[in-house]
Amino acid sequence: MAPDTLAAPPPAHDTATTPPGPAISLVDVVKDYGGDRKGAANGAAVRGVDLDIGEGEFFSLLGPSGCGKTTTLRMIAGFEEPTGGRILLHGRDMVGVPPDQRDVNLVFQSYALFPHLSVADNVAFGLRRHRVPKGEIHDRVDRMLHTVELADKADRRPRQLSGGQQQRVALARALVNRPRALLLDEPLGALDLKLRQSMQLELKRIQREVGITFVYVTHDQAEALTMSDRIAVMNGGLVEQVGPPREVYERPATAFVAGFIGTSNVLSGRLADSGTGSGAEAGARTGVLDLGDGQQVVLPLPEGAAAGSPVEVTVRPEKITLGAAPPTGRVSRIRGTVEEVVYLGTSSSYAVRTATGTELTVFQPNDGTAALTPGRGDTVWLTWATAHSYPLAPAPAPAPAPGPDAPAPR
Image (cartoon, rainbow, N blue to C red; front, side, top):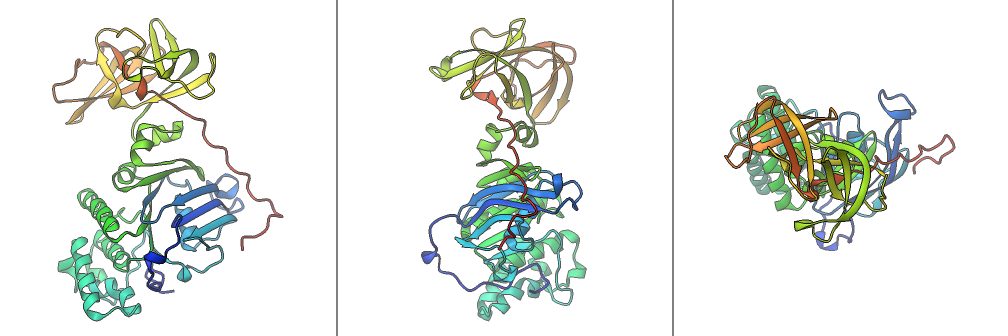
């Protein structure tokens, strides 16, 4: 395989004959390093991952360093073999299949450009190996260089470029081949903020136009929310939630997801009672966490929850309203003292300490619509709609790692 981050271009495919079903499937995939990788629990970097990635989908693996997202990507590409489970590409089991025989291209974090070739020749390398006609090579390379804003650098060598420019060349080289699936391991990490944001939109536009499946690894929550059709949030080798960006942000499934995706407030207590909602939530079953002294959190009733059940609830800072007096009725209301106010331009952030010692964050727009703009030391009441209280599920339990007698992956 050529040392340019790309597998040899696969044969041209006919999308009309592509069998129905996911483009990529991971079935109970485990990668266990036997305890020789620092930070991996029991040596397991990936612990029983199940994922289906749709044809033409922009799918992101999101999580902190060491969560297993890059290992998962490398197993899809064939640079790592799973300890257990199956990896299917368009219905074909790829376990044991060499990287250059998989219908995917991988863009690493490193650039790995050919130093003796120009920028244009680096981008055209895969097309020439695939014997694409010269006229088409010229057109596709020129179009891709304009996309990554390097058209004026076409004749330069990699050593004449900055690190960010070299990363864009590597990205263009992968995109110009139009593989059936493109795997990207934080390819925008070397770019400055403005260009990175621009390239996020360009990447999504390109992916939508050519219809290629993208699997994108990132630790940047905003990046994943901006580009993805769906996101898998990983933690400790496990997938804690999969869903569209809005769902993952608005309705985090676990405390980890709530804390990792943006800013979130987590409250815990025991369910005091249940009943029905009012207003927009009329008829819905709701529960109440009674915090005493007229304070309460009203939430959609979790399935199977009964009075006395312990419950964790999250609420996003921008969903909370600040007021000088407690609201009435069956609504969430908590009293606190403003400890800090931070001006953020379009909004202000308030750190509010409750009577129980919990610190809650509140975002309010600076557009004149806020009912109250308190200062440090002021007593305030926090309230929000029942639909914005999201009960959290426990973190998923890991699948048992394969024992020493487990069969090797084929």
